[in-house]
Length: 262
Image 1 (cartoon, rainbow, N blue to C red):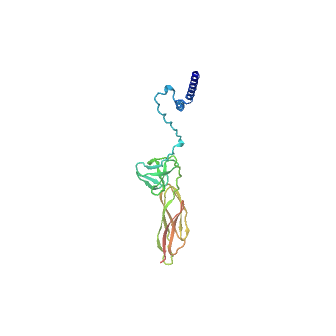
Image 2: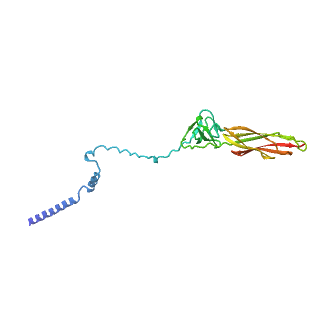
């Protein structure tokens, strides 16, 4: 009977021990999750031999290449001229044969808007009134981007002024206007702003157009003209005579004379 009890006690103790072994296998004292986390962290870690080395500096930033199309397009500088040392004449055309129409003073500047065919003259914009005139390259200092300046043809000169005088301005033919019949002397002045050919004629109130002439100018300036006129009939009154410019532009100057019959 005692042996039976002893056997029973041993059997129970063995069963309990077996339960403790199974429990120890399925429930470890150290959480598995900690080991798994540590192993995953080592997948990209340095080898064990380098794990204790000092951390290296972060890599330098990669340079970004900028192509020319990424850069802003610079604004071209405005082409300008200023006198070299003395005031500069600005002329109607690209030559000293054209009249002066403006003066660019020392220290002043003007924008370039054109150039002559031979490259010796710049067409500039007059600051005060935005009109154009020409300065010689030899007497100015240029600046800015001149590469895009277009060639501009020289302008055609024209008549700027015309004057006419008639002599005598008054005559008295006596009673009945019988004479003597004088010759009227017509004197005029034609002024141009450059080289040009001028067509002109005399026109009278009594006899219409009585002449036709051509006058050539090699440069700007004035030339005198003269003509004689004898009326085809005489009567008293006040009469006009015209100096008429027909080319290159139209212009008229008038003079008058008086005929008395007393």
